[in-house]
Amino acid sequence: MELSLTPETRRLIEERMRRDGYATADEVVRAALELLDQDSDLDPETLAAIDRAEDQIARGEYREWTQASAELRKKIPRGIAGRDTV
Image 1 (cartoon, rainbow, N blue to C red):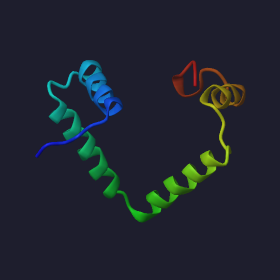
Image 2 (image 1 turned 90 degrees about the vertical axis):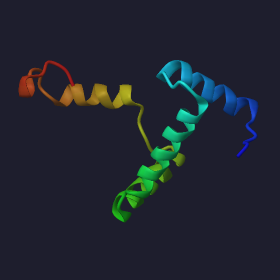
Image 3 (image 1 turned 120 degrees about the horizontal axis):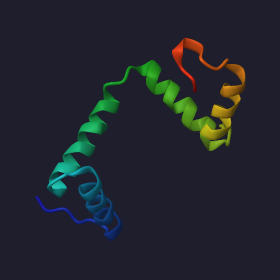
Image 4 (image 1 turned 90 degrees about the horizontal axis):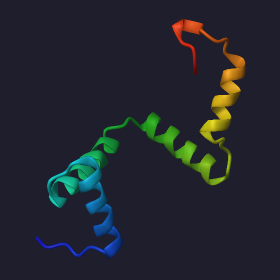
C-alpha cells in the first residue's frame, strides 16, 4: 500500500520520529492508530463527557492551567497531604 502525505504530515511524522525515538514512519503511524483504537474503547458516558468538554472549550468556557493552578494554591493549605505544592 502506498500513501500520499502532505508536506505538513511528513514534517509531523519526522518530528515524532526524532522526538519520541520511533525508528520508522510506520511505527509512528501504528502508534497513532493504536491511540485511535483506545478512544473507541471508552464507555458512552466518558465519550459524552469529552464531547461536553470540547463544546465548552469551543465556546471559550475554560481557564488556562496557570490561572486554575494559582486559584488552587490559594485554596489548599501548604503541606497538605505531605505535599508542598499543588
